[in-house]
Every structure is written in structure tokens, then in C-alpha cells.
Length: 591
Image (cartoon, rainbow, N blue to C red):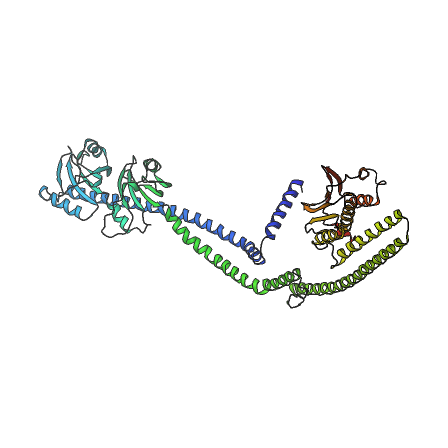
């Protein structure tokens, strides 16, 4: 397999995975059922498409067959006219009809066939000898062309389309009468009423909107009817339902067949057409195209009704069954897992432990929950034990520091040298501050991060510890959730900077030491300011130089990854410390 095909397959799998992750279990069951039913639905759709093609073919066959029937009926009418004319000629030649009875004789014959509107006897010059009453033959009958055709014909002839005196559409048929020597004696002519199409239109069971049209050899519309069974109602169809001229010309030229085209009104229709064997006439049956879709709709309904009903019932059954057999148990497992995530270690699935998949999953979950609860109880017991040991350790450390401070104080009282005594008192003072800082730090439950009010309580202690009649200490500290690893260095730095300012900033008078401790974003900013003597330059020299207090400040600042700088100003100085608030500093357990 090519790399491109592999990438496409992987992309498809990722897409399916993303889609599946957002679906509920019920929706997954439904999708599985739909996918399983997809082949059956495809087969049903193929059958429906085949049904549509069959209906399309069937309506074309029907239209063509009806046109053939209409054309055959017209041929029968023409054949009947030929037989009638032959009978009339034989009767006239036999001499049984005289001139006085001619009109009555022809009228009786015409009345016997509704399709025959006129019977006329003409002589060799084309003069009308006699005719039935109410003759519909056109004025000027016969014209020169028809008279010449009758003279030249050996037998029955059919003329072109004509319009009778009252507007009735006609086809004229004639049979010449000859003398014994074969010379033209005259002819008997007949007008065949094309309204016989209306008679058929009333009796044809065609879809609503179907039409029957008679067209001449040049595509001209001779007659046009609606094919509807409406009793005595007029069946004349509107001209908008006539086939467009281009299609009529094509039908007249091809003679017979089926085509799909438009009417003058723009409607899509299926046309079956057939030319008659005489009279140069074509009969066209036009059926609306929607008729095939109506029949197709019934076929589609019959084809798809059963599969769709089965699919709907299957979806309903799958929804109920999945809820009763799967989703309910999975919901119980999910609820128990959610309770455990919220801290309820007593939560259990309550699903029966069977030997099947969900039962085994529930058993595994409940076993896991019991194991976690047991481990959690053991961890909590050990944590309580360690916390108790730590409190005891802190208490002993505090007692030991108090004892060391007392020993240093006692020893300092025995020293006579003022310089040595001052050094001992300085150490004793630092021990006192460190003892209180340690008490503040551990006088709470042990945790990776101390209480956020530690800086506030530390500031309050240092403010009371170093304020005197000569120097006032003002500390503005806000609550900061410091890691334990940062709390001790910060306390020592604040103690040393405040102690240094109280001792050296105002050697000859009174003053104020201002301390600010703020959290700026992810950094902690400490500022110790006074209005007294400038800071000695040894703060910025090598860490091996300077007083012990300044070395402590430098070392603790490096431990905090902080930046220490002195900002001198008019009449004093400000020592600033900026260090990052490392929220993960307690992760290694450093205290």
C-alpha cells in the first residue's frame, strides 16, 4: 500500500474516532443499526429506481399503443367509407335509384353512420347531381385538384383535410364511377367527420390532462381533444396543450413512435403518435409527464413501505433494548465512577457481577474501588502519623532553640568585653527572631503551601519585635500563598534587613522603617526603606565581605532566585528584593 493511501486511511480512522468520541452509547447503537440496514435500503432504492424506469417505459408504451389504436380506428372508418361508397356505386350503376330518389337515398345512407356527414354525387364535369340534406362538404366542392384526382383514379381515393360549410373538420373520400368503356362518368364523394376522435376520447381511460390530437402531413392541428370521460361535457382542449410546432413537424415526418416534448404552454409531456394508412393524417396521444411519477410514487411506496416500517420498528426496539440491556448498566457504572472522582470512595456500581462483559467490567470496577479505598485509608493513616511526628519534631526544635537562646543569653552576661558582649547579644537576638519565625511557620497543619496569611502574621511579629521608642517599624504585607521552601528564606531576609535598618539607619536620632511585601503577577516584591544613613558599599561586593547579616541576605536571595538591589534616594535608601513565586517549589518536599 502506498504512503498516500496509508495517510488517507489514517485520516479516515482519526475522523471516525473524533466522531465516535462525541456520540452517546444509544446513538452508537442507532448508527450500528443504520449501517446494518444500509444494504437493504440500497437494494430498496435500486428497486425503486428500476420501478421508475419501468413506469417511464410503460407510459411510453401506453401512449404509443393508444396512438396505434386511434390510427387503426381511423383506418377502419376509411375502410367503412370505401365499402359504403362501393355499395352506393353498384346501386347507382344497377339503375335502381332514379334522380328523384337520389337525395333521399344518399341521406338514408349518411344517417346510418354518424362519422359520415355528407354524401354527394357529381358528374364528369364536377357538377353536383344530388346530395343528402345538410351536406357539410366545403363550398366550391369539388375543386380542380380533387376533380382531377377522381378522373385519374382507378378506385377509392382519400383527399386531404378540409373544413365543412359549418366549420366541421372533414376528410373527403371519393369513388369514381366509370362507363363500360372505362371513361369517367362521375363520382360519389363523402365527407368523413374527424370528430370521431371525440367519441374515442370519451371512452379512453387516460390520466387527467391527457390529450388526443389529429395533425396533417404538414404538422397542422386538425382536431384536439381532452381525453377525459366527462359525459356530455365539451371535450375541446385549450390550444396551450397542443404539442409545440417543432414536435408536430417531427411527428408528421417520422410517422410513428414516442417522444418527450413540450406543449405550447410549456408542460412536459410524453407523446405517442402514429400516421394513418390513408388520408395523410397522424394521431397523437399526449400524456402529462407527472402521470408517470404518480404511478412511480405508488410503486415507490409499495417498494419502500415494508423496509421503512421494519427499520422504524427496529430503531424503536433497539432504543428500548439498548436502554434495558446495556445503557442502564453503563449509566450505573458511570455514576459510580463520577462519585469516586468527586471523592466518594464508598461508591460501587451496583451492577450484578456476572460472567459476561458488563458483569465482568462491574466486578473489576468494584474491586478497583475497594482497593483504592483501602490504599487511601492506609495513606491517610500514615499521613496523620507523619503529621503528628512533624508536630512533635517542630515542638522539640522550638524548645531546643529556646534553650540555645537562653544559654547564649546566660553566657553573654558573663562576658566583660563590650564588643564580645554585643556580638553575643546580636546572636541571641537573631535566635529569638528565628525561633518566632519557625513557630509562625509550623504552627499550622503541614502542607506543601503554607497559609496565605503567613506574610501578614510575619510582618505583624517583626513590627512588634523591632519597634521601639527610637525607631518605628511599619510593615504593609498582603496575603501571599508562599511555598514552604520560600517562607523561611523570606522570613530571614526580612528579619535581617529590618534589624539592620533599626540599628544603622538612625544612629543619632529617631526614624521610621517602612516595609512593603506585595505580589506582582508571578513575582514577590519586598521593599525595606528608611530615611537614614546610606547603605554601606559592601552589599554590592563579593559575598565573602560585609557583615554576617548582609551575607545572610545575599545567600537567602540566591536561594530564592531573587534579585537584590539598593535604590538610594534623597535622605535615605530602599533595599528591594524581587523573586519568582515558584508554586511547585514544595513538590520535592523541601522545608
